[in-house]
Image (cartoon, rainbow, N blue to C red):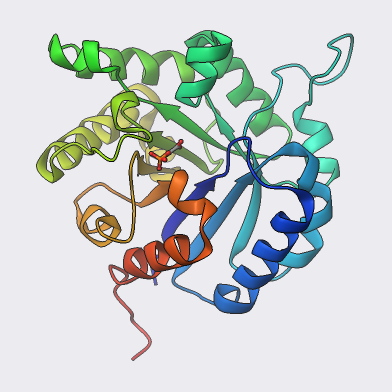
Length: 257
Ligand code: PEP
């Protein structure tokens, strides 16, 4: 059975006890499911204390960022080997807030992607155009560049995700038209195949993020070329998030009955 992939991005929210309670409830409700993979991207400080809760479940723990280097004089930074050592399996890279507030470049995102894969983390690489880029008709050109630079040198046969997150859709309650999401995902997939070949194409899931809720996750996950969705604001609220997951899971065609 093909599984639908869902990720949460908690950003700079929740305290340790809230994070633990949330993950425990999530494990109890959805942990045994075979039709979904739920990747919880959460603040660094909680990762080590929740990884034991998700053992042998469909839930994975991811970081929201990491440094491109492995060790050294980078005060305050966290690297891929450090994340792996506390049981982290995934990492969100190049989120639009990292690009906007911390001036992360495509090249830096690419270096982080390579370090993540080298150290055994599965990256979720975010790409997406700004409103100005969209309005000036440059969205596909921007995505093309991001795919070329952020995935440059990607080794085949590693799982990787690309999250299409139009910057203007994040936290705004506005999404592109469904047809536009489909067209853009097909464009992204085509470019991944063209630049990196069949093996990378086969190992890369393409996810959509930006104002996803229970009201639109079924429809978005039903689109051609969409392997799953990311939830930001909605993932902070247990009911909103789990309803959104259930809706996404309705798109999975079951072969066991
Ligand atoms: C995000 O920040 O990755 C995101 C998808 O946010 P939201 O769902 O709140 O738009």
